[in-house]
Image (cartoon, rainbow, N blue to C red; front, side, top):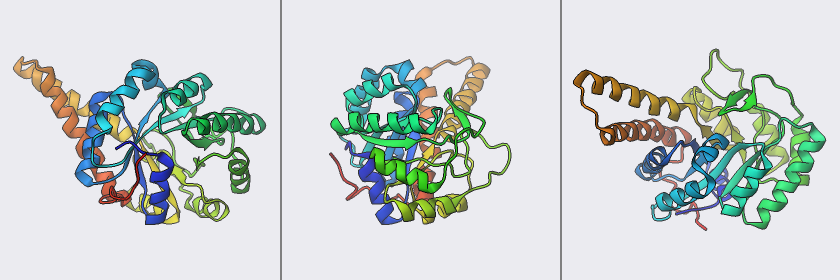
Length: 290
């Protein structure tokens, strides 16, 4: 069943768990992620990067998601991840996706607030939720982002901007980074607690791949109710393909559907564990649907 991102994450807030938000690449990984959610009886947010949207197309991605998610017995939302491009936002909102992340972290604060407010007005008019990012989370993901923390603000500023713009979810800097960690991050769960005291909006953790189970639990206990996973899926997907191709070369036996099956199984296994770690397993009932 297709549902609201805001509703799912609010349920997570109330229940003390986080909803996995997983970046998919194609119909194969989309179905594998939903299969994992069904296996764990958990809500899930399917995320799509701007790069993937441009490669697949908004119309095809929308229809593929609808075909995969409409009849499943768990609530599933469709979210546009890290998008600074207003034209892509417009197209996705018009297509009726569950939510968008308007990434204004490359703008100065005044412009970021103004444009976020404009995106919120547009999206809410179409029944679409908005996740807001005005301070940049370190790391480049699918061509979006920066390896340098250019814009950083106080939690008071973030809460005030969210109130003025009407954004539904907040994506602050929490010490994490996109991509694979090369050294241990300095995590900032206290920022979550401070924001949670200032606003009731769901708080999002980006850069989840590579954190320990204890790290995730600390953030969830602090108030995070949406956690993004991207690199973990990509690695599972590509390693499964690589291993299959090596075996195919050794045997000189080339059967793409068999490779698709291996990739799907690897992605489902990789993603399924996050439902347990985030505490969302078994919370499909009552999570809500549009």
